[in-house]
Amino acid sequence: MVGMSRPEMTASTSFTHMRVALAHHWMVSMRGGEKVLEQICQVLPGAPIYTLVAEPEKLSPILRGHPMHTSWLQRIPGGVRNYKKLLPLFPAAVSALSVEEPVDFVISSDASVIKGLAIPSGVPHLCYCYSPPRYLWDLQKDYAESAEAGGPLGRAVFNCVAPYVREFDRRAAGRVTHFVAISEFVRQRIKTAYGREAEVIYPPVALDEFIVTEKEPEDFYLVVSQLVPYKRIDLAVEAFNRMKRRLVVIGEGSERARLEKMAGPTVTFLGPQPLPVLRDHFQRCRALIFPGVEDFGITPLEAQASGRPVIAYRMGGALETVRENSTGVFFDAQTAENLIEAAERLEQMKFNPAECRGNAERFAPGHFRANFATCLVKSLQIKGRAEK
Image (cartoon, helix red, strand yellow):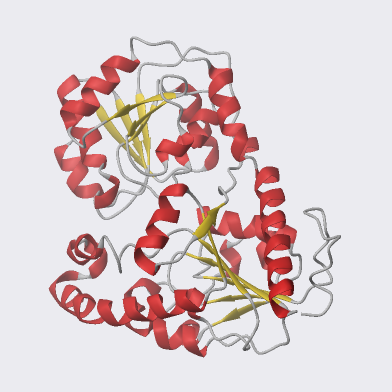
């Protein structure tokens, strides 16, 4: 790799002279992964992006400003809208998504199997991994039983193809040069699933979208989440039914109808809401309820950026983003009883909004860009030394 391993390279190095290709699993909305990719694009402006399917009109101007290459799934009628149902085709579609132009480096931003795209021999590949895909590894049974699997026929197909897609993912991981995980929790999952080591760079949180107010919190708790089984929103609904305390749930998903049916009069479902409504509820809530196991979890940091504490299950990424008895409290078992006890404990405590905000500031986008650039420089230098 000519010119890429100069000793004077630092984290402030401009990468505009590099020929870089980016890859991202799919680009159909601006969720957490796409917001991370947006920050990577600011470090590597102009780099082409390879993805399974894309809806450019739903992406930010920064992402739309990059050349975009989609797989042949894009041309299947309804493929963009129903891409998740095309899982059996993912390996073939990813394998055919070939980086053919001359490149010095490939960076994948992956929560699925895009890491398996075809790249020129000898080109280093850094994978920023949100998680080994849970539907292929530790949550395969949960996914098969969820509404997303598409009924009995969908479950049968999924159970048939999952081992094949998982093996494709495992082989693709073996060809990655360098893994970067979004959390220590994911670093361990990468080691378990792929037998690979990874360093950790925490993803960015759009802190400027949330502000701390001087107002006292109102008497309600908040859930902001996809309403799918592994999020365990049922625990929050059951706990607040029993406490007869107000709970506001913002989000949509396959579990919504079931959760609304079990909810009592103190639990309100608002469905998906725009940023101004989210910001308002974060500012006014007593605390955010976070009862699932997440690889990282953005919403606890959005709550803390708004000056509010978090009640979280003691596992997963929350252990890295919430400071116990300082910016939130934990409960030790996924039961309504444990969540109730944590809520009662929180109500006896006083939390400093400025301290909550200060903890969230550790995850500012500027920190992410600097850390990612440092990692990229280090990877290039290691590769350069290996080639000598």
